[in-house]
Image (cartoon, rainbow, N blue to C red; front, side, top):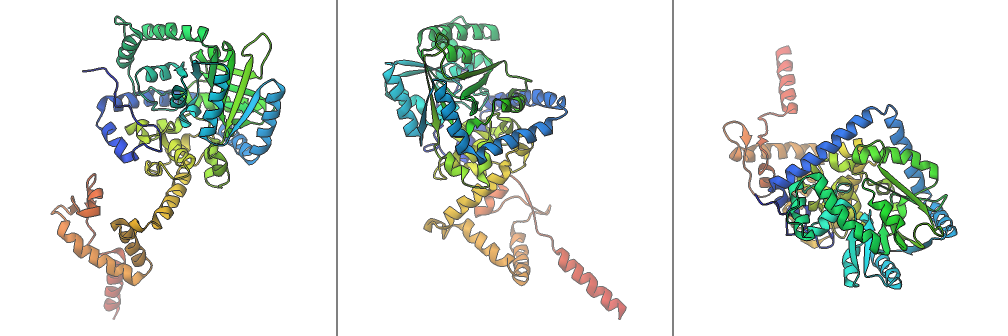
Length: 491
């Protein structure tokens, strides 16, 4: 069996990505990828469950984390201004970007001032949101991913499929093939030590020679103007301390009021994300310090639709997310499809609500339906985002959008829903509809009492499940007949 990763790289730009059902279909037929995803999510789930069980105040921690994030969103303007003031006082430069294009332009202008031809990157999911790498390449600047998983994907011409473990769909043999081919190491063994040594040797040269870096941020601290990043490999520490110029790109919702808030959020983040009591590396930095670390430090605060989300009561909770990906690991849909089917850097349940909103509901419209609404994501979320509630709200908005489109006026599904609405509005019409349905379904009911195949729109239901035929008598009819019989007996 070939160990090559897929070369038909998935499309992760929601503006051009295919709808979720179309993208998911070939993945469901890829047994190796599904096996890789199931194994990785099972491992993380098991570790998380063990660590949460030992934390007796876990629910209190969740409540505290949710309260901090909700308070931030209710006072976001105040804390962003405080962060800008504190960061500037510490020697940093804060830029404000209204959208993806403006953020790309700011970053490229800074890199051009540095005469940069290469830039190293760490922890920058937000850069994927704004499609930064293609823009850098177009500007003649080569981006080098330094997270091990991101490096695997970059060298393999692949895309992330998980928020915390971007390469969880790639197994060890596939990693070996990629490194051997792209690093010129034909004799590379596929054991973990050899693979990490190869990555370390490859990246070490970049850390020591590239003078510019781009980072994301787990949190911004308004009180001190600090930026916090947690990671597991140490590449973050190298990226954040060795370059001459550091650019941090962060969404505006990442701010926290106080340094002390990290005490709560770092506990829930590490346990929920990787099943650890604490991340191996936690880096915090504030502005610039002569003789220590970068000499120039920029923070680009990205809006890109977040202000509009903030203004809506139900959807606002989306911005409480701390990108732990616990909802992905618990989601029965994600566990079958992996992340590529979502067509966005943000996969899984959180991606299903965040991406359409960032796209102002013009793209990624199939994602709110990529859920069974089982509620597993809500149960595991460390900041208590009610994802099913937001999914239902987004579905309602999409239906409202579609309802006004002339193409939907004669759509069989919409006509069927209008007919159902008419029948359900009247007890008499509902009884007539039941009788007609009972008569009509007899033509499709097998001898075992089940309907195995329906025509037209009904085929979508029977394609994957059987349907029991309507009973000969409803409960109301049975009750009415029984009462009528009693009255006759009484006479």
